[in-house]
Structure formats: C-alpha cells, structure tokens
Amino acid sequence: MILEGSLKIEHIGRYSKNLHPFATDSFKGDWETRGFGRATDFNLMTTGKVRCSLKGKSLKSGTFFELRLVNPEKIVGFYSFKGAFTFETGDETITLNEKDFLIANFGKKIIQAKITALEETELIVSNVYLPGG
Image (cartoon, rainbow, N blue to C red; front, top):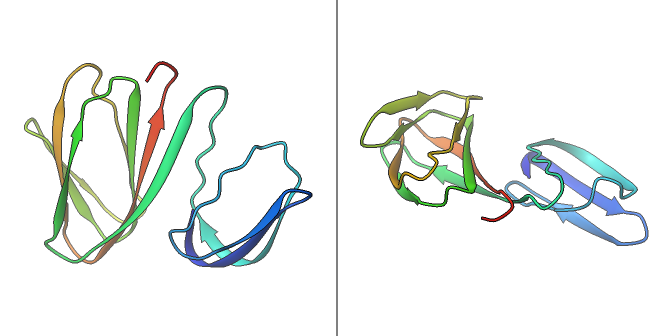
C-alpha cells in the first residue's frame, strides 16, 4: 500500500499498475517486479494459504469508527502512519502514536473495538485470515 508519493509497479510479463496513496497491489513474491517513482509504502507479506487485506483510513480529530472482531482465525493490525488514536475495548484503552503498530487477536472472544482519532490521523487496518478462517 502506498502511503505517500506515487509508484508505477511493473510485473514483467503480467501487468503494470500506477499506485497513489492508499492504493494496493497484491502479487506473488517470486514475480519479477520493477518499481518506478518515489513512495513510502506499507507491505504485508504472507505465505501458504494465509490471505490478507489492507485498508487506509483518514480520520479527523475526535472522529471514530467501530469494529466487531469475531473470527478466531483473523488477526487485525492497526498502523498509525500519521497522527495518534486510541484503540478501546470493554477491557482496556491503548493509545497509538505516529508509527506505532498494534496486533489484535482475541481468540474465541467477540470484541467490539472503538478507534478514535486524537488528532488528524491516517491509519492502516490490516486483516490477516489464517487457514480455516
């Protein structure tokens, strides 16, 4: 996922794609790949049958969104690219500052989480689905 700047990514013999902030591209690690441009990116690499997704979110100070975490085969990561936010469950509140990363895996518990921006914030939500999930 591109965080800043832009990048043209070329997978030799397959396709090319222009990427801008919050745009993603998924590809196999053994593909011959070239990149053109200047960008800051966030990479999530998996293996085997593990699947994943990335979503960028921009939040104004004081705004929030909620997530219901119910899948024991799913791990959710939160990366604070810019700004700061709180991750709140019924049990605890964690503050993430710029460049912090939080991994949330609650096993078989069903968790309702609230993410609130403490200032203007750009964050990445990564979902990793383990085999069987």
